[in-house]
Image 1 (tube, rainbow, N blue to C red):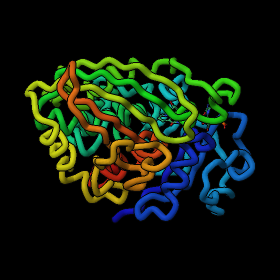
Image 2 (image 1 turned 30 degrees about the horizontal axis):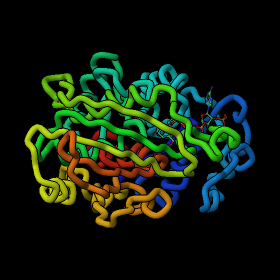
Image 3 (image 1 turned 135 degrees about the horizontal axis):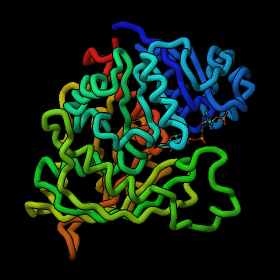
Image 4 (image 1 turned 180 degrees about the horizontal axis):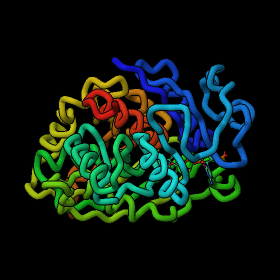
Length: 350
Ligand code: NAP
């Protein structure tokens, strides 16, 4: 397999650090460039970063000098974890300069010609890339995004149910980890002994992104899936792992056993199954009455799966369940990396 040189935008942040951790010893990708804000520019990465992961900062990466978030960077492909406000222009500038930009930021997710890619679910949406390049007059460069952290945890089980029975509507209440707000994120005096029932912009993302992801590619556009969603999002005092309590109305009612079978059997499309970061089970079903729990279950399948438990009948809808996803792994850096692997394996990273 060809090797690609990776540049990371937002490299000092919570997601940037996960990229560095997940890319250490990656078989296809090597980090050659790092960039962050002008506060960090010109510094040695090891001096600029407040490294917060339990694995050591790789020595080679610590010695790299942080560049500016503008082209050129010494790399073949860009992984972006910039704050949404500045990702729009910056990522487009890299794509226009010929870099494939594989982004975790929200800025371009809902653009009609940008794939919001979850390879197990909508690999065919990658066919938007040449449409995008033609529309924007880009040659080698392009933009591909992954969903919001909560959306990703939720959409894998929704895809399994959509495939098996169809989903008419879903109501989700989330309990989201502090690391989802980046670093330093939420002040300790706000979150200790507390739950904050507001995360700016989050409910809209959770209500809209799954419709695009589960949508069908028709010609050169995605027709959003017809399901309707309602989200209530809360920040809780957990370090990593977003938990979602979900009630679902199916198009075709099904008993709990059939719902469980559909979740367990879900594997996604073949192209997404054997990538270096693919989970062997995209959905892990727990049968204990008190699981999943963030601290105990978030690292199952190396943090790359949605963990589902408490699947039971819902007195108002059809079925309800609890879903857990690791927000900085499958919900962020791991999703971007899986997208990059999928694009590489299908010949879209030249
Ligand atoms: P973070 O910890 O606050 O890190 C932000 C990064 O962006 C840092 O590297 C920072 O560099 C850089 N940055 C800030 N302002 C900049 C500017 N004006 N120009 C260039 N770089 C700038 O945030 P995060 O949690 O890693 O989140 C990054 C992105 O991922 C956001 O779009 C977020 O919504 C998304 N996301 C996060 C999660 C999660 O669980 N945390 C999950 C899904 C999606 P300095 O160190 O130099 O300030």
